[in-house]
Image (cartoon, rainbow, N blue to C red):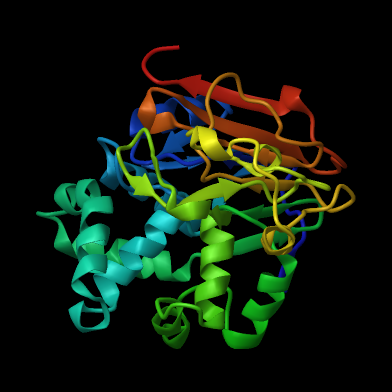
Length: 320
């Protein structure tokens, strides 16, 4: 595992942007970053982007340009989100590697990005090549960063099956789309998190209109007993199973990030309301920016030991 030492007085970890460039400009300004020659920088701090820069929002090209220029200038880090991973699959693997159902699903998820880059194909290809270089996770001396879930067993496996922690390894990308391979399980866990299958063939229809057979689960629940104890998503469970007891098999599928592990930052989960910590050492910074929510950052200073809710900073959709 590559562990990074601090070379800045602090880091500003920013959650899922999804093409909301206006909010990103305002948040960077609020955090004290200045734009010079189209690149944002800070005299003593660096940004860490949590992934999901693309899709859904109105200014995807601009968001990619801001993040990419900051990373390339050494003013920021970025980890891969599941939406950038989708773009790599759709854009680089070729039609022969994907069945029609998966191609159509990916095309739908990527529709805003594909549309906004439609007349800028060279720029889109540059973005894809950049996505290939983004690590799936980062570990610093004092904290960790991953898009959806830190599972140490999967991170250990990543070092065994891939030559790097990004998709510059072409074979890793190819194998990651093959269901149930080690590579596929690594990507699903770290970029999409943990989930459970709804029992008895039940489904739920999310607020996005998608019908799902699974529900997202916490990866920090300690001694959970029921579905209520582990669900972690905006959509409620079907009433018949809201309070259903977890089976032994379901408990074995869960992951638990321990209280004594390093502070961890994730995005991915479409939180709402006033930003807060989800437990003493985990902060989720995805607050539905593209859905009339907030774009949230956490200011982690060199030497910090734990997390403090007062270090959450955000801007609202529209004018603050």
